[in-house]
Image (cartoon, rainbow, N blue to C red; front, side, top):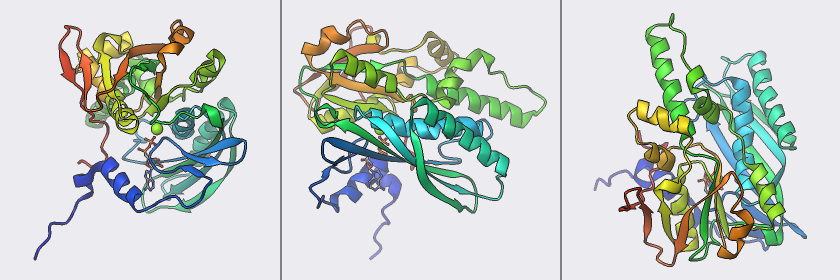
Length: 344
Ligand code: ADP
Ligand code: MG
C-alpha cells in the first residue's frame, strides 16, 4: 500500500526536534539539561557549563547580496552568545566551522573572520577551534558557544510560575523590517542596476538585522540588581513564538498587553509604509535577539526603573490561555508563527 511520505514541513522545525529528542535520554549524571532549552547544561563541579550551537546557511539565513561578510561573522558569534545569555550565562569560548565553495576568495574569508574577531573582542570570548571544509555551493557557518553560570543562577525556559511578571528587553520588529527593506532594495537593484539603494533612511532597522548585538549587558544588569529570572529565552523567532516556548516549558498561561510591547518609532513608521501591522511585526518578526524573561513579583522594584527592560504582562495558572489585550481592550489569542525554514 502506498503510504504517504512524511514531509519535514508536516512536522515543522519544532516538531522535528521533538521527534529527534524522544529517542535520546540522558545517560550521564553530568547532563543536567539536554535538548529543549537555549543551551545544554552540564555539571562541571562548582559551575554549570552551557553549550549551544547554531548554523547559518547562505540563501536561508543570509543573502550575500546585502550582507557584508564582516557583519555576518559578527552576527554568527552574537546569536550564539545570545543563547548562552538566555540561560543567564557568560560565553567564554567558541568554535567556528565553515564550509566554503570556490566562489569565495581569501579576502572574503578574511572579512568574515574580521567580524568574528570583533565579536570575540566585544564579548570577551576566545576562539578555540573549529573546522574548515569545502561546499558544492554557498557558505555555511556553524558556531558552538561554551559558557558558564553559577548553579543557582541558571535560567531555564521552564521556571516561570503563575503571576510572574513578563519582561522583554530593547525593542522588537526592527530586524524584520530591516529584511523587508533590504529585499525591496535588492529587487530594485536587480531590475535596474543603475539605481542606488536607498537605505540611509532605514539605517536603524537594517542595523538591527545586520549588526546583531547579544544582550549580555542585560545579563550583567540582572546580576547587579540581584535578580535571577524565573525563566528566560532569547527572541530569535518572534515574541509570540518565544512566549509559547515559555508557556509550554513552564506550564503557565500568558497575558500580555499590546500597548506595553516595545516598538521603536522608526520600526513603526516603516511597518506602516510597508502596509504591515507594527504589532504583528513585533510578535512574529524574527531575529531581534532581545531577551524575554519572567521575574517573581518580589523582584519588581529592582527592575522597574531599568530603561531598557519593559514589563509587558504576566503569567497565570491557565497554560492553555495565551492572550494579548489590545489597545482597544479586546482580548486577542496569541498565535506563534515564528520563522519556519521548512515551509516553502
Ligand atoms: P534556539 O532557537 O534557541 O537556537 P532551537 O530552536 O534551534 O533553539 O533548538 C531548540 C533545542 O533543540 C535546543 O536544545 C537545541 O540544542 C536542540 N536541537 C535542535 N536541533 C537539534 C538536532 N538536530 N539534534 C539534537 N538537538 C537539536
Ligand atoms: Mg535561543
